[in-house]
Length: 270
Image (cartoon, rainbow, N blue to C red; front, side, top):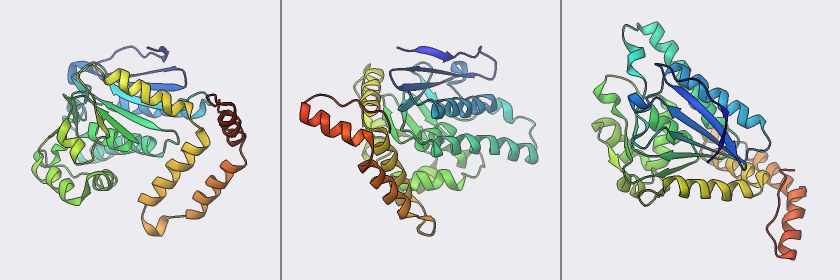
């Protein structure tokens, strides 16, 4: 499928693999013995992989997935939380929030390819992505109420934006899980694909995104994020500037030429 550009050795705390091919970056959460539970070193691996993909102009879209088919990410690696006091727990939380912040602020399209468990921190990762494509065996949950934990505001806000306050309350209050079809009905995922077709479907979508005009997609992603932000923080003038910049871009000229010549456009992101 792709040639690895980063291949850390497996550890007891899991690891993150990254690779790229044809304009698509891949991030794999690999802690398969623990259903891809994410450890602190893995959070740092996600941050590093995103930073590398952001700086690579050849990367137009990134897909994040779990190793194997049984889990996308079953939450935080609980083994790290044993004998941790409040101060260390806060420091650990900050690492996870930094990882979620890196996902949310990533300027290129992000797709979560979800097979199996998507629980707790896994939900945070998936909802921080732009799109979520699920296999029929996917299940989604936020079990903080069963553990006595508080769910961070930034993650709560994203959940509310996706599924509305009523369903967000139901998930957080009951700690119940949603199967793939219900997740689709409430708007948590974009697509549920046929068994065995998740990788093929997600790759094809990522390829379509990667073939489109990068400046247009970046402008759209920024505008949507602005629309979802608190009204006091919105700067719609930047959205207007980005949209107008597309009009003077080489890519817009290429798009017009390609339309006239009846051929696929070749966009350069400038």
